Length: 296
Length: 296
Image (cartoon, rainbow over all chains, first blue to last red; front, side, top):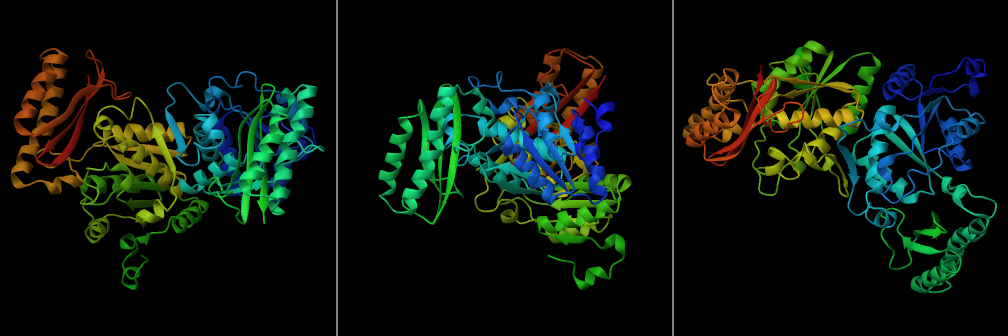
């Protein structure tokens, strides 16, 4: 996909260059950096929503150039997960991206990212990747770490924008960037929510009207837990049990609801200054995650 | 370690800047690249010999700036291997490097490379890392891939110089660089040998005079095997058996002697155009490796 004649007649802020070729993107960004331009990078799997757009806006505030990638990464999906049916709506996504300033859009093919004979994987382990979501999605964070390492090597020196909704993912990527000495600044931006509190997610479009209504419980329970913890309305154990009970009434299956240290992601045994409550649960067949930071 | 007053009075080609700090090196190289200078990188574990110096000379021919790293990487040594006693002779190494042009010397500490809480590993698997040396040194190539990924992220866009003696290592690193989209050109330079044919290696200094004499058999057997293969003096199986017999007479333990495809490192079942014979064996307590490329 290259810039069509039609596009190049659009005003510059609406005129994003699109490439599917990693080497081509490397060359373009290298040139930009040589001119002293800073690069902000927003990696996505498409099916964009306001959360993604908020990352683009954050990037625009801090960088000369903003790059968005759309790539549904096969290596981070389990065998029984939704890789095949994950929403792929490029035209719709590009329309949304034209409402904000995006300089480059990178949409590689799966075969460009993982050619025949591909053999290299990056793992952030064992503590970080095998708990919480990692426990229920074996290999998921290895896939995430691998594709992010690849994307960051293609993009080069940059600021990287991630959403706080994927809290564990952001923690894994922060560690990856630090451990592998990448010249990347990681910026984690606040979760964007619907008016009723539901965290925005590409997977929300899977929900039936009934499921959508029940899904509100997730954020409601997490915010109630935060309030109860801050107001010391009971022990950690009892408040967590109450939250689980309330959540169970509304969703179909709970994978976990944990109160953790936001740095290490390890379960908190007693109240501490900074905590995060994280949950993953199914509403119908749709797996949703959410989290709330708790600062005493 | 920073440049001493004494050094800065040396002529420029003898005046290499030394740093132990990854971020400092990143900044220096970034500045060089901004001036349009190309960077050649020679990663080593020190105990330098003519093989390493040949890599430095190759780098000097193709790049504006040459960087040498000296880092005995703990993650690539097994529990019962020679990490603790691996020769660390920095003063001697620096003396040798002053006989060639080296612009930067990078000698990070183990804790700078693997700080408390370090958790990220890079694996090139499973075929490439679990055969040949990988079979006898579990985790070795994971350690190599991890430290090379780190070093390359510190160094950035560069040409990377590796010795052909570590044939499997070069193959693993070539795959790593390709798979992770690193902006690095890998150059594998010919093995440098002693006059009697022994491949130069930092570990040769472990050899007693008797062991040193017996070690000659390794290259002699590989070159004889090459000649016999090219002259079709017998079947692949019989020639390999003869080579193994001859090697066994001289060394104390053979881990493997294989005839492989130089691209995939898979064992060759019948004669083909390009092959490589690789061996790893012990002379006394010292593990030595060598290989010879066979082009019909």
